[in-house]
Length: 130
Image (cartoon, rainbow, N blue to C red; front, side, top):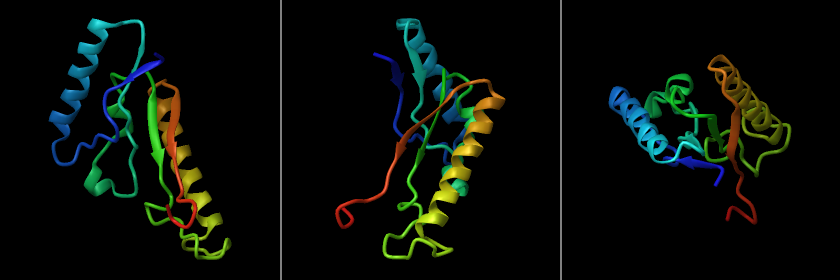
């Protein structure tokens, strides 16, 4: 076991105080039972839907041992496999630039709270969208 991930893509939504209390209390329970393994929360990070998700990379990872983000360029509308690579809206080059910026922003947040960053998930559809 490398780490305990307490959730997959948890979201603060409109309950930020309660959400962060759950993160803090859950981390404390796990640490109390097993202080020999890392703890993280499985956060996808800010996402392009920050008004809905309402995550805060720095606050959300205050009680984690490392920061996590997930990057889904196609799901987030940054990439469309039917568009040419150079398409400025959703071509591969534009998607790569957005994904890189997203990861760099998360890395800056992780650095600010002195924690490593793990890009846990990165995905594009394959085999005709499957």
